[in-house]
Picture (cartoon, rainbow, N blue to C red):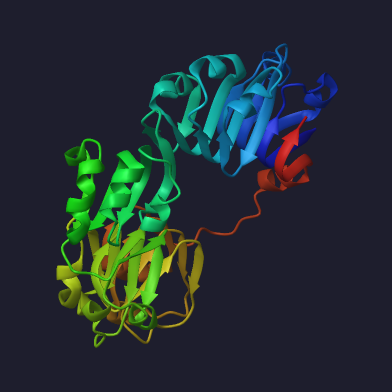
Length: 405
């Protein structure tokens, strides 16, 4: 008897009866794809830790598309399909303007997305009725040219369009002066779906072109900056990074961590900061607080910041002050003195698991500013017979991205 373990996508729709009889357990599966027939054949099988399960009939002409990454679906893509599609997307799925609801109904059986969905408004209802999504949905106006992500609007960018174009942007940045004559020639209207960031001196130039302007989430930078620097995703800046800028607005599409010395003239290099969250030392917060955007979440720490997102083992005493943010498994060994932890740890934000000897737990609990995880002593090591028996059980398949049985 055998187990199937650790498979990203497991397709058992057409599993043979002789194989099904050999399987006792299916465990740790990202996506399980079944049929009515396979559910009957595998009724005796234990199923544990299944991320998602979908059922696709095998008596219909349904083709399975597994896409790890971004996929753009247009009219030509769908018309080239013979039969129906089940779209399984780990990434971003985007439907273009030329796709119709009729075509979706004819060609798409179901959609499963771990990521983002983008589509025009006039077909959004049809698409969503067939979709299960773990992520965000971005719906933009029909008959507009859509630009996903962050777009910086410049004169050079505008020159590429036909007269009186209708544009839609997920996020729009205006960080340089625009030619008004060029705007009037090329742009009929602009939709901003999520957010617009503009230097104050250019707001009057752009707002007449933006649909429903006062409903748009807008960040107007109240400084005479020399442009807007965009950084995608979470980032960390040191002194040398800050000194490379010269009077700009910094827009981080994520969290910003600052690891800076106290004597750096931050405001000489960066006029304004926009991000989701800024993480910084209390020694520098007072110097830059007035250039942080009003909607930015601020997280202040003391000493050096120690962040753990995986597994970390602390086996030596600290020699400097630290603030700890644990989002994984953090282990303090016997070699670390409890007195050292009391002296050098400012605070702990724990969202994971912290293991430490019994005489350390009290100190660590007292240092906890936030504790949404667990703190405990190490579990005893055992030679559990049941675990030993499981190890002896045959494994049919394991550790694969995709598998069809």
